Amino acid sequence: DKEKGTIIPCPPKKMIRIIESKLNGKTRLAICRGETAEVSAEDKYRIERLQHKELLAGIKDEEEQARLKADAAAAKEKERLRRQQEELDKKEVEKQAKIRAAAKERERLHHIQQEELRRKEAEEKARLAEEEERRRRQQE
Image 1 (tube, helix red, strand yellow):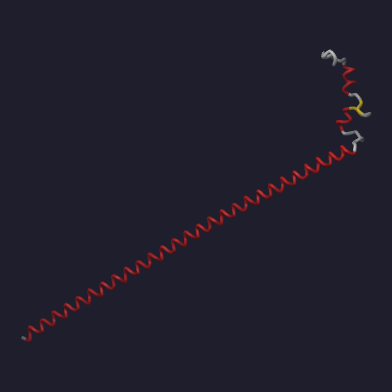
Image 2: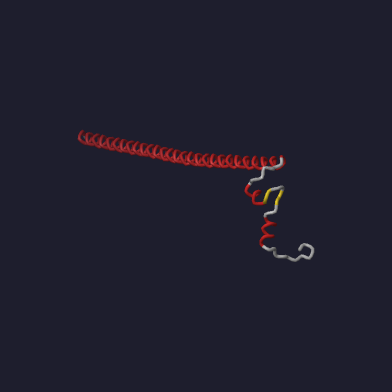
């Protein structure tokens, strides 16, 4: 009872009659099943707008996912290129280090050869001086 605020239990037949009461000539069960042919133009418009919004949201989600996948692929490619460039730079540094080491080795060998030539020249001068000294002694 609405006025008194009490709940009155209904007998089963009355309960069924209340639950299945007609709404614009259709039962609630028929409405739930979608058997109603009476959908107003405004309701159709609202339904179409909701469907359109859902479609747009789906498209936006797909576009967002595609954009995220493209961004991830671009980031992955950028990282791959960065690593490749690092590897090339590393190889170039190693190559330059080998070139410098080879140049130092050539310079060291050249220096050793020059020292050897100087030593031989000094020995030759000393030998010639000794021979010259012997000849003088023999002539005296």
